[in-house]
Length: 149
Image (cartoon, rainbow, N blue to C red; front, side, top):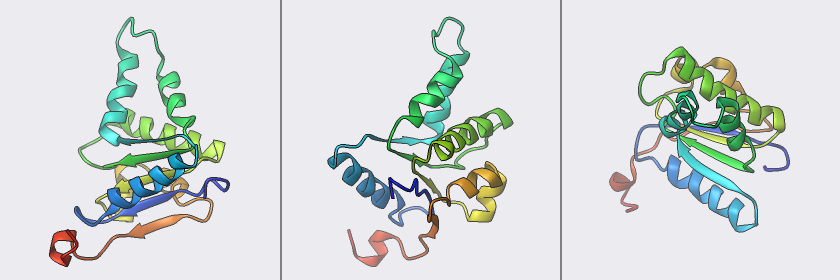
């Protein structure tokens, strides 16, 4: 998966195990000596906006590039909240840069693939399906109802 830059979009309602599975993959990648990071989309956007503050000493591009260097990025809660066009662009930028570098990203969302295409961008969703990846629908009962927890 890492060698091919395989990316995924995990889609489904809350409490279906998307974050649990993504973090298990992330932990496995890191256990083998690779670098990975988990961040929510809103926290990522907040960090990029730091560059807008005069005197921050860092550019928007530098912050975006800092997320490209990881062997795996888990970007949680994509589509939570309402994004401005500039914020959509920030998400598109990191997903696209990682796609260009051939490094995998796992995006997590509670929205359907069609809704997700409208929320951020159809091209960004397409890039999260690359390298043999795809959209995985988590459409089963939540953990507590299934008696797992």
